[in-house]
Length: 629
Image 1: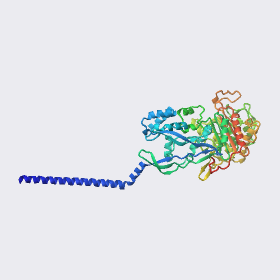
Image 2 (image 1 turned 45 degrees about the vertical axis):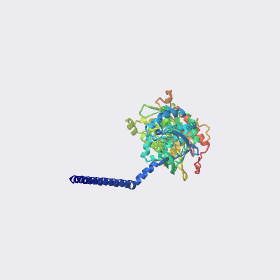
Image 3 (image 1 turned 180 degrees about the vertical axis):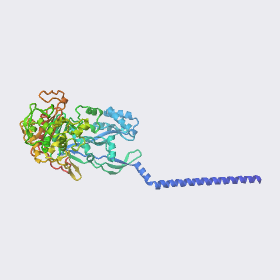
Image 4 (image 1 turned 90 degrees about the horizontal axis):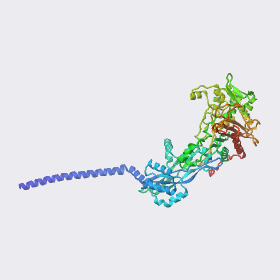
């Protein structure tokens, strides 16, 4: 019984232990199930929206749709910048096992350069592997066909099509239109800072210069999206929804292609610029800068070799000489100086001055020579403008002083931006005593003023500034901003861009405006006028003014040293307008290092006016139903 009792006691103990363990395990199991169901409830109820969105994102993708860029036309509806289909070869590195070997095979198949391969591997290095990288842009149809036949051999490669900017007239309008090129890091940072980056989700190009850059917002349009369902390897199964992109606006320029072609022909590759402007409205009818370059080279990304050649070209084709070229305005400013003299009562239309071959500041031994060694004799302001007498304007500058000259020439727009609608513009320099002190830490001397009196010395201006200044003179003080854009095609039709006027330049006597204009008439119509030879047998009445900008210091008497270095020869300028009584066309021309102020630049101005006057400009409204295309 004792043994049995011991056995029963052990059995009872073991039973109690088993029961306690069973209960503990059961409690643990129940606790785990409670925790499991609590977590399921949390995932299925509390986080339902979050995980549904994540699941949907894994299955649904938004693919951005690039908007087509707005077209650019001249004032008559001739296409200046359009879009054409283009094809690129892209590779997804993660889908390719032997990337370098595949690239080499594609180079051999399509005749691609080593430089293209280097650019490709640079892209691959700087971006995630699941993104595509471009191996070749602007493939020919032969290259597309050759790849399409063998595409099955290249698992990670494919052809992508897009619309690409195209400039049918090449370098003819580069400095007007500018160009588009690939978006770089600087562009991307700017777009991000201005909140526009998402609108470029599907774009690779952006306006870089000229009209393309200035009116980027108008031309670009708005990105669209398509919602697609993809499978586990990312391939599109079906399209769920689509929001089409909004194309950019088509725009019309004031540029007349006929005049633009003529301007480039007349420049003939020489370094210089030509501007044709409507002085009443500020419309820029032609703006040519020479030499130029082909903007199509930049659309797909210009090669390092070609870009280096442009950068190191001694003729600086990348500079827009019409708005960025700064030159001494020379004698072209004499009609403007006349306005200052008349309005300040320093001279009158009847003032007579005897011009010797030089001007001498009273009490000084220094002589400022006239271009005519024997002088011009007795003259009024009309003859002084007609013959471009330096001594008359030396004397006028001496009477006026630099402060007065600066005050009046500032009203003509010198030393400041004209406001023309491109970003590539310089202000030139309208000198003053304060400017010289700040720039050179030197006082202003009276001799400095004498040189400024004939547009030399420290004075520099752009051709666009000259056009702006003479539009003010021609229109008797009305100040209009030069304008390249004519209007925009919107959903409501063609919307004309109005002229933009500044505060007028008022004279004490409005009749004074006619005095320098009559002098400019004599420059062309007078027998001794500096423009008479270039404008001989003119079929219409016109006015003009020549200018010769000296680049190196030398004697100006009859023993003058002959300049032999071509880059040291004088710049030739000419300003002309027609018809004389109701001007419609204002021309500014400049030829660098021409050495003659009344020959090449005047001949160009004559040719431009002849062309403009031969056929009226098309001023009819654009057909809003088809955008003039």
